[in-house]
Image (tube, rainbow, N blue to C red; front, side):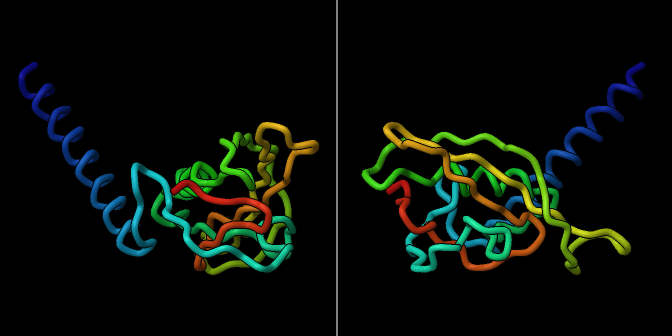
Length: 146
């Protein structure tokens, strides 16, 4: 029984360490992250950035098992035009595309999130690519957490 407990403890510790190593490597690639969100300073001037399937926000991280977490890291830092707290929920996925960052023979897909904040008339639809990465910017009409 003691042997099984020792094996379980060893497995737990090695998995936990591996996750920390992956997160550290990701943070080094992505730049500064504060309190588990991305630090965004650049405002996009392109009105299609993030709002169209042809110009999604590329948060990357899928190959490290961090794709969905990166999506939430990005969305969590967004604020309304006057600093309003933004809420979001995943609507689904769409738009298959070729990318070298998936398993051979597979395609990537975009995740679609509805984003809203107090006093907004309609929700905003944001397209996110968790397979590829690029410089992250604040979509036009939104701001970011300071």
